[in-house]
Each structure stands twice: as C-alpha cells, then as structure tokens.
Length: 176
Image 1: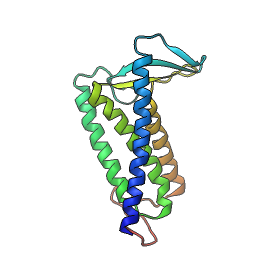
Image 2: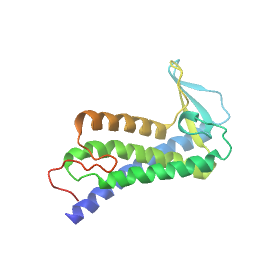
Image 3: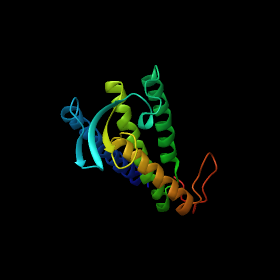
C-alpha cells in the first residue's frame, strides 16, 4: 500500500511538472516573440496574442500596488501550501480523484505564476479574448480557472461528502 501511494504521488508530481513546463514554455515563447510587438490575431476578432507584464493578482487585480510582488508571492505560497495539504489529506478512495484532478490544475497554475513572480517580478500574460471584455491571461491562469470551476462542480454535485474545513469526509474506511 505504501509503494502504491508513493507511485501515485510520483505520477501527480510528473503531471504537475508537465503542466508547469507547458506554461513556462508558452511564456518563454511569448517573451521572445510577442514582447515589443503589436497584438496578433490568433483567431481574428476572437482570440489574440499580446505581451503583458502583470504585476497584480489574478487577471491584473490590484496591478501597480506597491510591494505587490512580495505580497502576492507570500499569499500564493500560503494558498499553494493549503491546496497541497488538502490534496494530500483527501481520502484515498477512487471517487476523491475527482477532486484531486482539479486541485492538481490549481496547484500547477499557481506554481507556474509563482515562478514568473520569482524570476521576473511579474507574471507574463499573452492571451486576449476580443469578443468579450476579459483580462489578458496565460496558460497557468487557465489551469487555475478551469481547476476552480471543476473543483466547485465536483464538490457540489458529485463528491458531496468531501472533507472541508476540518469536517471529515464520509468514507468507506480506506483512509491513508
């Protein structure tokens, strides 16, 4: 049982590393190909590419706030720690995998943007939805947004008895 748990965590770790690497590759491409260039249509009038240095929180919230990089980095580390602890503490029953997948997306996205904050002092954003008024975003933002949405749907409608805020889950007895 112990070896299976280690194997599972290695698989989750590799999955997270692949997601983070994809995010960082797209950001590296954006820095090399979009920085200083005019906005480019990927799908004319719908999805465009640009280069933006986001010093704020999610989608530029509180951009320009003095000391934002340190503040948001600390907040991100705390939230990532809580998400990771919750991930590890979830019961090992297969149905709780439905919560681990979106948590993995949230964690990978958070780490991807934290890497930017540590490396550059800002987060690199590059995708623009032109058909709606939506902030510029990146791959890591997509992971977090999709992960939060999936987690909420799974927790509300599918795995209704998941543990939250210290309230234990109703399990079939296979804690681990």
